[in-house]
Length: 261
Ligand SMILES: Nc1ncnc2c1ncn2[C@@H]1O[C@H](COP(=O)(O)OP(=O)(O)O)[C@@H](O)[C@H]1O
Ligand SMILES: [Mg+2]
Image (cartoon, rainbow, N blue to C red):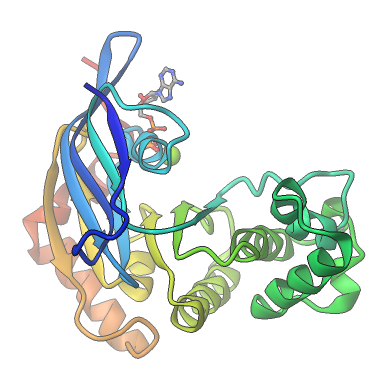
């Protein structure tokens, strides 16, 4: 029986708890018996091959779709979302895109502008960028706008669904640094879906691995040290160890697509 509850006032320090989550599309099982939790201020990276159900799990956890089995408990107050596809309104400039959730929440124009500009500053967008429309912005700038739009409501939890996958290597790195800094300043927790192990190892406190069929979480690895304090060589060495010596990550690079029987 699907259930969603808000663990307000409970003693747990968990920002998110998923218990025994199962889901199917048109009778085909996508997720089965998924249990995971994210602690307050913790960034957890969720990795797994394409098609294994990562986005579905994010949609269930955030309440976009309802699971067929299991329960979702939110220990957080408010969440934001950042997707690979930035989903900006093409007819609104960057400032109005960032302020959009405030508008929905009924916040007045002056306050909206102030809060949008504050969020823009957090992702290093300048005043001149805020007057531009999405079509006038580069891919990285558009992703900054979408992160600022998530930050503007001051969430204590953010869902990230492969937000930097389409960006080139240098830009991806800058965006990861921005995310790490912003998580530390704003103290949000997050569930970050990626299939890039280097990215997971840079930005997260812990990596959780889904199996090829989304049937279970096959394991997890804590990443020592705080994100932002790990040197490049440390990150690189750890990823090499994961890929070459750790059976948990074997299917990450062996299988690109879920094989449908
Ligand atoms: N709305 C939907 N209707 C039917 N099948 C879906 C739907 N959304 C996702 N799927 C299927 O569920 C599986 C998992 O999808 P998804 O969660 O997007 O995987 P991932 O994000 O890991 O790549 C895929 O086989 C996909 O085709
Ligand atoms: Mg996906």
